[in-house]
Image (cartoon, rainbow, N blue to C red):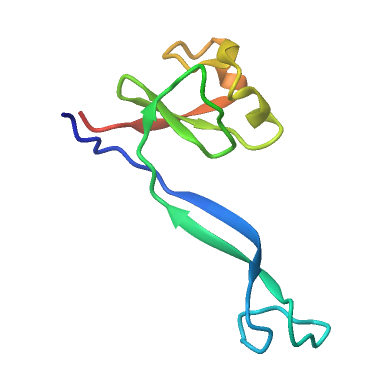
Length: 108
């Protein structure tokens, strides 16, 4: 079994999280007493896995080819990250550069 030592930080935004209307971190511009919600942002640290042509990628996702890391660009370029025609490679002149940017190297 191989242990993956390559990770990246990814913020995950969740909207509509229930909160207590009287709490200071619960937005309540209309003075409600029930039904308040807020948006939360949590940082996760997923491992950098090998690119898979069958996977769905979104802006900010990081994949690897060998030890080379690639990051899916922001919208609208991220729309191409899940298209296998844009699979990242080590050739900087390929089509992949429209959807991905280089993001360093994973440790061996």
